[in-house]
Image 1 (cartoon, rainbow, N blue to C red):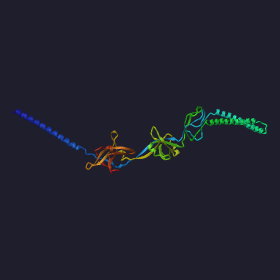
Image 2 (image 1 turned 45 degrees about the horizontal axis):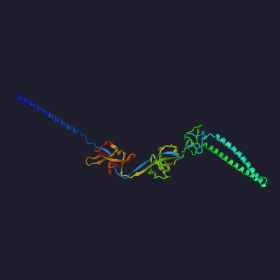
Image 3 (image 1 turned 90 degrees about the horizontal axis):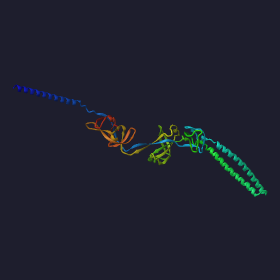
Image 4 (image 1 turned 90 degrees about the vertical axis):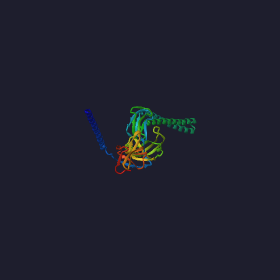
Length: 379
């Protein structure tokens, strides 16, 4: 009996302990559930700025064609005959006037030849004068019957022979004088010396470059233009060019009929109207020519700040849809960028007229998020 009573007491204590443990566990779970409900934060609604977009039938593209500034004339000056360089009166960067003497050759041998030929000329002219006097006398004697026709013919033909010698000698003298002129390099036009290849005392051959001369009074631009654009240009037309932060006008002087092999463009030569612009630019400077054209393709014009970069080069925008109960909700729309200029882009996609596109603060929100629109919706 005592053993049975002890067993009952032990069993009751055990069941009591289990009951207390179960009640405690249930109490803790209830507390945890209550605390989790109380800790859940309220849904945050972010304010965003959105603009309503509407379709357009096309966009403006500005094509930019590049060229370079060059002189209208550029000559590599050389002597037409060989010899010893005696003087060079201009150096790199020097300005020269048209007709100015730039370089000369040693002409001592030519001067000596000229002196010898001049002496021969004087001798022949004296002989010729005597022959003419003799012919006149023989003619008078023949008319009086005191001289034969043979003597008169000899005197007459001697004059003809001396005149031939005189003419040949004059040609030789003229040749020497031409060589003397060819021993001098004169500036064919006003300009600036761009380079110097020969120094004093050098012996040069005919045609060897001595100086490079650039004409600065008439700068021009050589621009490569797309063939379809070049077909709309005409000789004498005025173009607006840009170079070195300057804007200036020029007149088309030539449009070449061939295409440049490397760039497949048409070369257009433009003479600058303001010749003084060359003082503020340098030959070789980059010159730009801008042409605006309209591309007819439906799409939407959006601010650049509205674009969201996606994977594999895809672009998208965040749109806002007004809900009945949950408020405005953010969605993601994939778009194709057709053109970008400045702070705006022209896109095509699944947008609809009047769609609200997030134009600011897109990095703070994600698709599916609830937002509120700030201020008036832009257009």
